[in-house]
Length: 490
Ligand SMILES: *Cc1c(COP(=O)(O)O)cnc(C)c1O
Image (cartoon, rainbow, N blue to C red):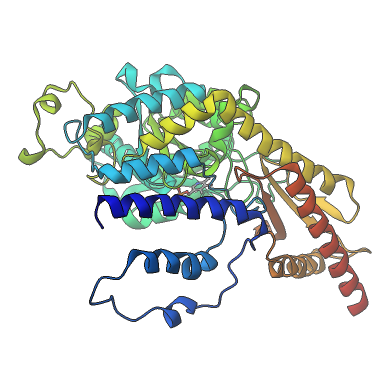
């Protein structure tokens, strides 16, 4: 493909993207294909001779798009969102075009400098303490691929700090603390690092909406230390994946600082962290505790932050802890500025060497939306979710299973007459199966302390109150059918 061919193909690709978004509302949310549909259609090896671009582009539209689940669909209420914007897409497009691995300042000064600036913009938008700003040169922010990578990086730094403080500790005695609702990356970090992981108990039913507290943490640390185990990091969550539960960061942080200062506090706010952009949600989202005590904090822009995957923001209180743990400077990576310490070398702030030029996406989105536009989006998602939660609250035969958390509502249906929990779970599994059979919206399920329930998560950049009302009508009708089916069967 030469430059003029690319010009045509590029315009054509933009046209296809626009047509996709114009038709998105009318598409099924869920792909209507069977397993191996693509293998049956595609040749089993790459073509020997190159093919015309038009054929390739058309195959994308006719073969690939129908096999996609449409995460940007306004009726996508599953998992957590990965809200994409055109501004973010353009950032990705231009970043790809220059193909910079940006590992050193010198490898592409603009990559490092823009990242350093926009991570400060983001820190300020979220109300973070200046200690986390890159401009202060003590802490700082760096873009990672995912929240799992951010947590793993923080845990590696925490281990290195702990081992520096207690050099005679054996690796076998180290323990990573998570809670029973921490994202599965906690377990994975244990597997990758070969370390023990202990899940501290939180209210499994999530009915109160509060997560891990200091009493539980203190009891666990005392018990472990007495048995010769050394907890060195606690992963606390603001907005768990299953239920949106929030650990009491301030209380946990105060205890760690006071009595166990060698235990690192990582706050995983991968999804809910974007709510920190709105002053009215900062208390709920634990800003004070984060600012006072978090050693590291992760917020995924690629979830609820209007930026297409991937873009996970990690802030640390002391950049030296990351660098101490991860600095590798072989001769071929040495530079004048790096040696002088006058520039940030982001390769020492994460696990890999090369890195994508992701700050362009943040820059484009924050400039085009402005902080006020970003906040308006977060508030709209929460308002939409509130509309749905009100319907649940006010309609008999429905029940909120936990207090709504930002833009996430957990609910279940109730049978017409009295019934035990086992029966109610059966009813709700049937209800969820019936929801899954619909392709015009998508919700996901979870289980909380033995209670099967349905998650309703709002976050697509294009969801409106009308879409919520449409979803509510579907949910209400399906619930009626399923209840009726159950009462006849019994
Ligand atoms: C989604 C999510 C994660 C994992 O995010 P990745 O970026 O896919 O690794 C971790 N923690 C929480 C709370 C999440 O919601």
